[in-house]
Image (cartoon, rainbow, N blue to C red; front, top):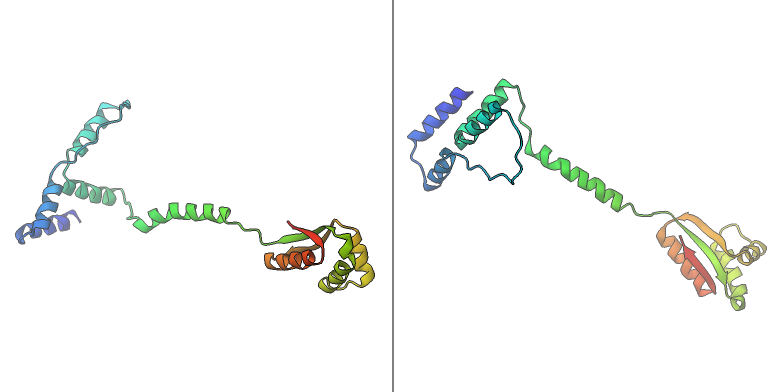
Length: 174
């Protein structure tokens, strides 16, 4: 593999170079600039210090060759960049999913009612709640605060609240 890379590089020397290629080549053949440490000194062995200085003195082309050599000798596989980038994105999606966990089940309660509109409220209760006759609706209204409906959607809860409010009931959606 290194032989193929070397042959490719020699072949690229024989081809005429554009200005862009010249700039890239000149940047690749210059030694890497080492950033200044932030003041914290980490103790290390002289062997590691020597290795560090030798690696930082390499040009970009030599670093690329060295990387390929390490991949071959250590039997490392190329990791697609999408996999590296998608891992933090997946964590972000999880956070958004938790943040956007929207309440989908609501309970509507009749808290109190206007005594003047009690008859209208009883009739509306009978009409809106299935399986209730007038006697059951009267007992239900008089037992306020009471749960009108549980585990319903937001739209249905809003409609029920509006209907009960029109006839003198005071409702709360939980």
